[in-house]
Amino acid sequence: MALTNTQYDEIMRSYQERQLARQHLIAARRQEVAAKDPSLNDIEGEIAHLSVQKARRLLAGDENALSGLKEEIAALSARRTALLLSLGYPADYFDPPYFCADCKDTGYIGSERCHCLKQASIDLIYAQSNLNSILNSENFSHFCLDYYGKDVFEADSDISSYAAAQNALQKCRQFVQNFGSVFDNLLLFGSTGVGKTFLSHCIAKELLDSGYSVIYFSAQQLFEQLADSTFGRTTADRPGYRDVLDCDLLIIDDLGTEMSNSFTTSQFFVCLNERLLHRKPTLISTNLDLQDIASVYSERVFSRIIQSFSLLHLFGRDIRVQKATFSCQPKGTML
Image 1 (spheres, rainbow, N blue to C red):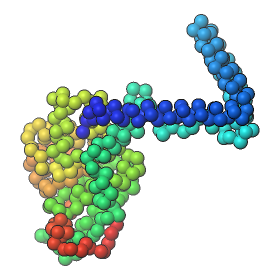
Image 2: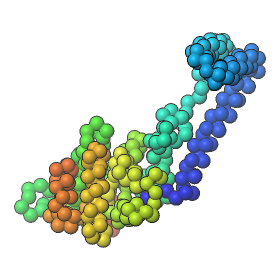
Image 3: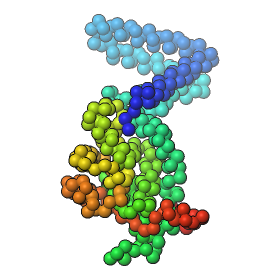
Image 4: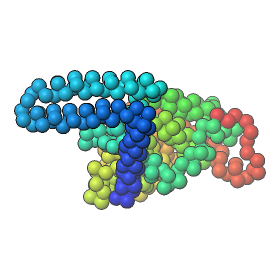
């Protein structure tokens, strides 16, 4: 998941282009206004002269220079604003908005990466993994309850496949609606082909569209990333490993399909525990049942999941088989 140098440079070039475009826009607007009223140039010249003059005084140890500078520049700025208004321009005509006001289109707030840079990194990975195209079709608008039978029950249960899916869908929607205000984690478990990954995609799209940072890994990809960071094959100060721990939502798909060993077990616990401690939500989908999770990943992992995750069980006929078998798609409840 870590960005290569080329990918990182590509993203940072876009920030440089934004800054340059904003500077050109401001320069063009100044020329436009000055053409209508050349006195703007006099005001701008006075502001520049004052700034240089006061900077020299500050360097010389004059502690009152800064306050005096602020007052004089404020007066000149007021004149400039009055000029703009008199010509029919808005007061902030020379201060066009940034794409991201928090970092002023630099990508960094101090030494920390801004949320927009984190999201740009994730968006690039999504684009290159083709997940964006998947989310165009696998979202809440295309989730169909007709694939779940009202006459399909599990042993010793009076809850139908349809009712279980309906409940899971409702809980996933609530998860999205409450995201950011209510801390929760989701475990989607059940047999192959019952919609666990589809629901994960639904949640991912909603949160990405709302501006949250979402990282989506298959279990195998996740453990490869954790191994890379552990053995020094990536750098933690670049987008990648820290995003696994810090992103708004981490989605781990198909847990149990990776090669399981003591390393994956310990790293899985560290990842889960770190995110729980910092109240960062995690969504896991798996074909394993609850007892299998305990036996494969240890009682410690199982305990964290039972205590901190909402458990959503899906079961029924394999949807992929249904789609392959029938030429037409169900036309019932689409949510």
